[in-house]
Image (tube, rainbow over all chains, first blue to last red; front, side, top):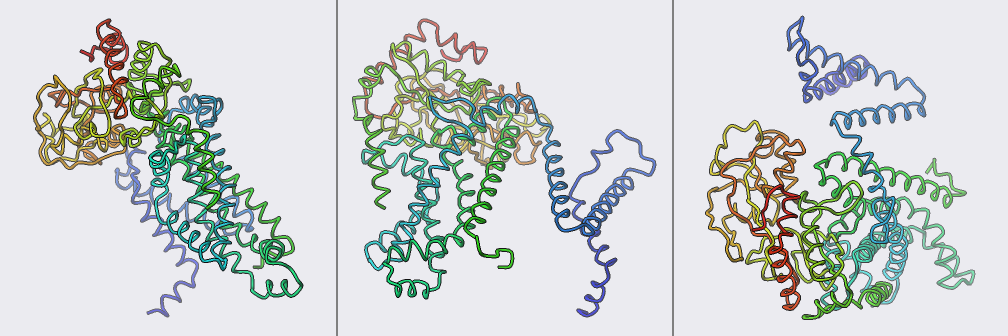
Length: 325
Length: 274
């Protein structure tokens, strides 16, 4: 049975037929009848619709085969272009009010000020940049404490990591904003948000930093000590420069996650991107318009973060052939 | 962890100056010359944002009028509903003009110095609905409401309104399949998808429904229109009787001189303030 299946699988035509059947079956979930509303059918409604479905499935399979013939680099671009067109068509099919989007876009992007401070995407970006800096410092300190021989440092850092990884960010935000005033510390929404984001992501990143530091073989530290370097020097000159290369990709991941998690701050009434999208969406019952606009702005911002991450990776990866690792 | 401590300390030093104690709220308002008002800007026509990114609406105008009556400037903040209703405002804002119904449960964390208008609570269905002709037909059906709203309490038959002169009401919907949403408008969004697609009906304030209809939502109100008349009040943090008295006087004066009616006409096309 298995043998027979493998033999059939070897034949490209069999594979393509199977692919065609799968595509056809998944197209069954789409209702094509609306395409033909009000037209007369020469072949009868059902035949016409099934024929369309079949042709579409054939077109998808044919498109797939064509792309596989291209060089890899071109395959990449063509696939991106096709997915992007599909994606835009999906949005286009919602019948959105582009005038509304255009009129409210500057507010979402954050052109202008709210009570003398940033708003919209500009505020989101500001909160993230500050939180990225603070959480990196926090993570490094917590990771070093976690690896130290001092019991108290170990206790504090494990407690911190455990609590802030173990509770939802939205609760941390509310605890800092509503809870701290009980002991007399009254923070505004934006500082409260930055503190919550920094603490939460610092805890996640502490574990990434620890993993990166521990991945450097112990022999390196021993060799450095034999050369007479002090502990601080070993960490700064030998371990960290090598660990950073390992730390960057997962840390970039965290920063992108943070960018989007900053939307949780909307509940405090900070006028960041998500909140602006909600307000302007509700104002004239154009939620879909504003949500899609905000989604695209978030996507653009995270793509530029990906770009910076790639640059930083290249900088710290000097001398190491990344493509073969 | 040290950094954490210093950040908090620094934050406390910058903002701690506004720390509030009971009885001082009015002094703070008067000495600063600003009344900080919280409003929930996700509910047109009560409160929303216009194309110039400014807050507008009935609640916003009432807030401005109250501040003017008290002889101070109005400043608006927009914390989330959860944050407002959890109390402990810590002097961040002085009063909430957010179309809030004074219930017994809420009165435990907030004060309600003055009712400023009334809205009918109404049941709404999709245009194509044929099974719900009167409100009691919604029994056992999928009904969408905003979470922790009076509408949810009503469907749970737990609603007790804590204000004077509230018309009597009875619970006419039995065992509704209650679906809660972050806001009432989201329930209307689900209802517009089609009759019975996600919801059979939604239950919210009549002005919200009318505003949605105006914006092309294919929905219709089921009679009788008012399941209950909801008094909507200004809320303050617990404990400052002087501020409460001042707000109460301001609202009474605004009602007497017709300002409230005028604002209501402007936003609702009718007087809901008497």
